[in-house]
Length: 101
View 1 (cartoon, rainbow, N blue to C red):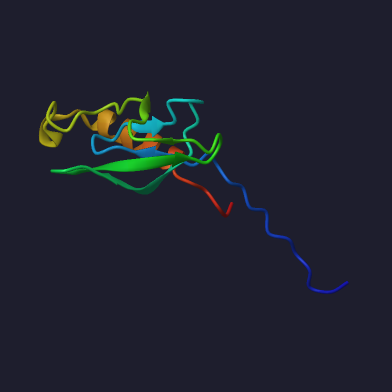
View 2: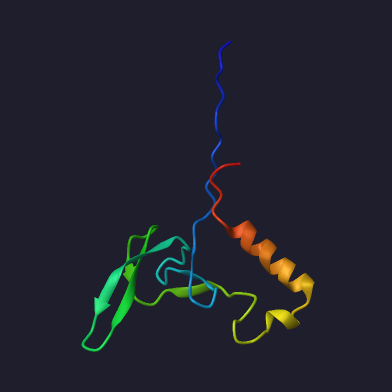
């Protein structure tokens, strides 16, 4: 019979987060699977450019697809209820890209 076994790999929707923890996406098609694609340089600064893996368009201003349940400046982790922290961590865990099951 041999020693054959198959590995099932499942890819969950990939996503990016902004500095505040919000999930961002393409403003043209709304897809969440965008990637960094260099910078646009201006006289005094530079701005991150993004490329959509779905519609292949580029943007400088991705949209917020899903807001983070916590704002960094809003709540002190020491003062948050444990249930809220657990809920947030569980949601973050469930959203991670899963490659091996």
